[in-house]
Image (cartoon, rainbow, N blue to C red):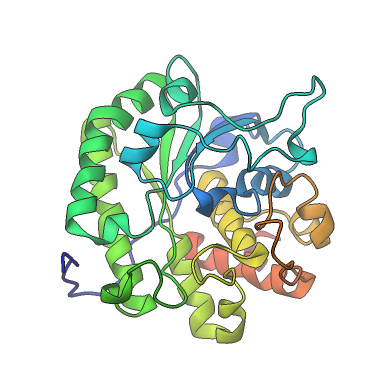
Length: 306
């Protein structure tokens, strides 16, 4: 096994240094790079929704299911079929599927934030982590430098149960610790390559673990039936973590506690359409998950911001 040793379960400090005022209070431009951890239930559009009108002026993405940093840079966007849906259709008849490649998304563009995630098991294994380090150094760091965006590394969550050969990565707590270690290495590398200590960590995995500790039954409901993709509840928690990380505060109660149908109305894709729908997010669970995100990222309850 190439699993990395873990000697400490201490949580990394992931609080955002970014405040709305620092970037003018709104009109942010956010690029997303990654895989189905983002496109299940359309996390980018959910983040737009809970942030409010005008806060995110523009978002675009390059997604491919199962992709690592290396494979996404090599293969590019694979959302032509998955985002071939009514909510994705533009007025001119085209579909909002994202940018065709990592290069086209970042090169010659201007972004405030570049949010990215690796294949979930990638940071937890020596060989795949080394491949990602190489891709960051040779491909991503130069492109991020050129577009001027603050990198935001989404620390993904451990699987609910072993899947896709993850048995050797241990319990959800052990798996999450390995992910933290891997993303911390990516952060150090980006800081060194970019020449400034302005790389943010969005600790979705720690938020999931806090739910597991406090409300285990709800933690199980954060996952799709396959044990690793997010359910609508999981994507909601992910979006709240990103909101806290990018904007330095949780989303407003009025916007983030709206009915499920309103929150996900613009989602280009939820779960695979041939599968039965998972339970809808309730306002009660939304309020709790919003608070979990605030406590995880910002170190204080959401009520402190209300």
